[in-house]
Length: 462
Image (cartoon, rainbow, N blue to C red; front, side, top):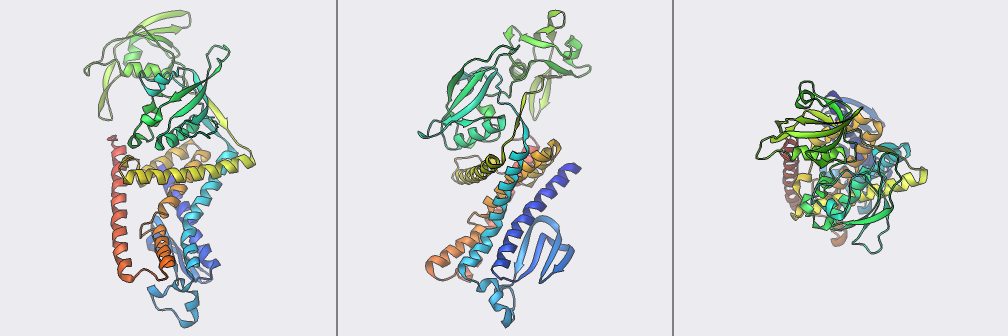
């Protein structure tokens, strides 16, 4: 909990500082007098004045602001009117407003580049046995197939994109599913026990059959992937649990379950989950390989409540650790991939928001501060590289969010300036007030929905 809170505060602090610093530097460059640079809102906890600007840290850390000299907010001495924000040319005002979100996008590029240069251990895109009758199963994918490339079928000029990790696969699948496109995969079958790999073959996944409303973090599972390949070993036993009482031992390799051949740990876990009928757990006959030979072990599972549903459990950890690969890029490629990833994340975020607005995508994809804090803590536990990658993702999201044409956001102000540039006159005070109230109402609805989704995930409702 302490790590989660600290990681969340650091995340918000960095992103807010960078965002407001973008506004601040642009204002200084345009010779606008900056009165206050605040991280947080409410009561001032710390302040220091440098030059003509007061830098403060306030009690509520969920945001910040840059207060500039402006005749709309108070009396301005005649000798400083030229430095007031409202008296600057339209292009300068637009530049100052846009500089905050752009700073977040530039930060994301830098952070993604750091991750690419430092390298990270990712799960290898080595597939477990697909779920029966799933898209992956229908495409002909099998246990021990490794995905090495992906091509979008809907784009005749699409190139083959390399797939180096499960993260790559998830990202490419999501992008194609959001656009309603099928994908073609290049796979290599890699049998165990030192046998040589099979030849390269191509399979097609009909991602276009998945509704956009179902494109979320569980997309790989919806396609039929039960997880990365892992040897079907008994990794750990709960003392006194059904598996331990029946005689299973750590290190046992499961060859079959109730006569069904078992190829990997994902298939084994799936077979156990599906063994219950009408909410009743039935005995399971494990045929296992153990030092000295093979034997049968009959285990009576117990029904356990997991997030509001009853599942049969044998109270044992199943599966060897998934294979990993070190994903690292050189100086130029790491930077270019960072730019591409930032652009792709921004474009996909806008696409998803648009689809949520018209009902084509699930509003469950909208997350709030609780989910952000949760993922901040999880990524920090994994190491600084994972945390930096998470920080880059949130930085892109913040930049995109602030560019939305809502009156209370930077994008809303840019919308006003677009109107002014087209008509030659600013938006009237009367309309500004109306639009401001409407923008606040929309933001409150979005925040309420995001918090509802946060609590629903926390309670296992989603």
